[in-house]
Image (cartoon, rainbow, N blue to C red; front, side, top):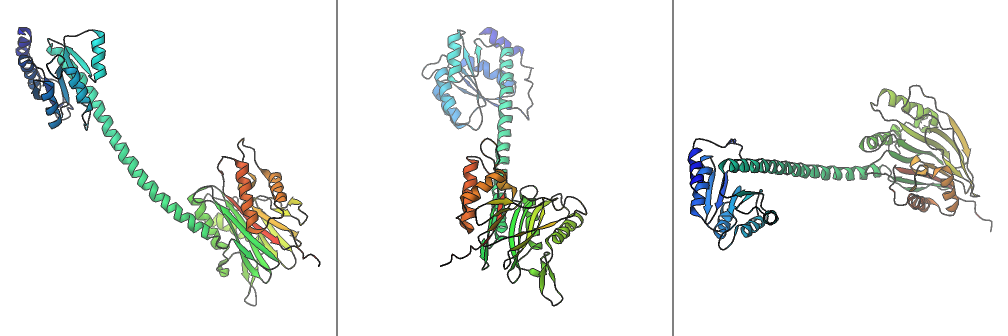
Length: 432
């Protein structure tokens, strides 16, 4: 004991090199049934600038830990009542805001004893009698560990706070996207419309909350209607905003603003040729609409009295024409997308439809639907579905088509928006 007391006297002018403002070990609890041992350790620790509490037993130490949790505990192993090992276990069970460092003081050096101490929750060991230099080194090591733990805890709190804020932002964006989806779906307000000799059904399903597909129809005059299917490049909000703008250009609600219609000399409205409309849209995209998006489109003028359909195609998939017999053919000339190059030229073609025929204008999300192995449905797959569903008409056909696509894709999600416009001429009445 004389050596320990002498060491205390020899080190009275020395201080532990810690940043008083940034130290993580401030409060130290010394637990030992020997008053002399406590005095030696307390003298050292106080000289080094620590706030020190003492306890003569494990039970007293537990009470002090509950009242004011220490940053560091130095506890003797062998004590009457609750020994150091048992106290260490109890210490680890106590709820704390931060980690507490625990050093066991022992004369034991056997590996099995050390293993017992570590298993109980001790962080380090000091052999008695305590050497002041070694004690300083052990405290410094504990300081480094606790500093890292506190920094990690602070970073975790910051991460959690940031994640909470991001979750709130995500929830807000998610709600906005849900509303945006409702608004986009409202652009296709009438999913089925009967025009007498023919009927039109519309399908629009985004791969996300909102998408870049748009379908619609508008009246031209008696027994004449316009049809269109659009697919804006990309996905998400910017594509959806573009579809909203295009819906205004082809509005059925406000014919005066519909680019596909023009005033006649008598003040009425008539259809522009579809190719001319695509040219107008292309000039708007290249000169007035500042965007990197472009879009594909099929625009058709349908005369329901004669079955004559005038179609302009700009990069959109070839429309599928199914005859009353069930045979399916794909019609069109391809063409460049709208908004890709200046002065693009667009062509027209015609098809004649008879009673019982139907025309499906669809987006590439249909024919490029992939199965589990990545194989695409393609035109032939769509033709097969249409032949199988030849007796199914209207919205029932489009809903069945969606089911068939889901079956084809299996567990995979749709990678693209899916849309379609179905024009069906009523079958000829069966002679009675």
